[in-house]
Length: 330
Image (cartoon, rainbow, N blue to C red; front, side):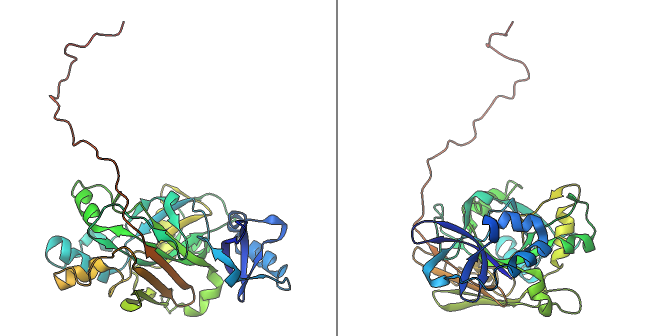
């Protein structure tokens, strides 16, 4: 099953199934959020009710991001990606011992999610980059997802979608020197789409170790930049969900990105390996197209950079421990 959100020519919003080359609304004015909360069994029941419904051609609608995420966690699970990026940041290829212990992630902004074909408006940056990823989408029904086992967590994976974690590498590099983040180098745009493909549709791609052997490619203006197999992840998605649930809740609608695939899944990796900004950073007008076997294609266009108001640097303060020259409230 493929699940999507869309907008018609008159601005009407729709949510439902992609059936062949058409979209069909969920029965009873259901929403993607409702279906995720109901889980795969509920989705199958709804799908059975629309198999004979005449849908609207995909050509007549505009696809939106396939869900409004409850949260977005982005992991870093490809060893090859870490090797390449570290070469640019540290001057040599290096994977920290701690990377192998647990699947590390950061939270990004669920309020700047983009959909298929959308234009990203980056901040002022000289090193705009893409990141080719696949994201798992959490569903239910189930008790609160806290401290799940890997088996329980795997059952909570409702489906998958393509994810592009747009990145301003120069901003990211500056803020990471403070040992916190990433933040403003990332949170201006994350693209998801073109739809959610339910987990059961991809069972045929699982290898003997439980990894999804999906071929993933990314092109900039039609030129192939990177390609990899998703099965090169360090951990399968069930482990990512289980780790995210440690002493915390995961809920339907949570999105968990795989992190950038290796072998050119982003420009930053190639810059590190090449020792230069080759290929060049993205520029206004560039089109980035990501194709993942079984999931479809997600495109995005780079728009003009948007400057933000200036802010003052940190104030130099005297580090007093008691008020000086300030009246005391009585």
